[in-house]
Image: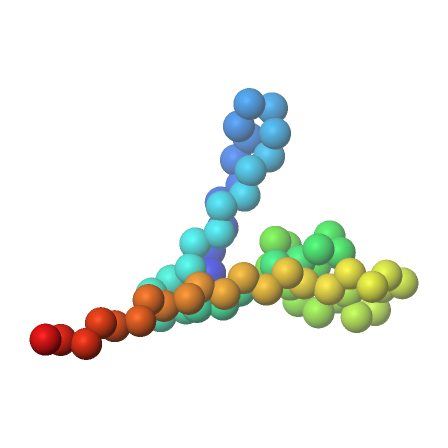
Length: 67
């Protein structure tokens, strides 16, 4: 599971999400109601808003053919 660190920098909160080896996708909460914030837990489905998660995907570089 991805991990996160939230820290104050220059008077503003900054959250850094780190994916573990082998992980390539994470869903981040945009409704601010998730009990697992900053990760999405689906709570937005019960909210009177159209906000859903932001999905972050890591593209793996294509392997170059060996000559």
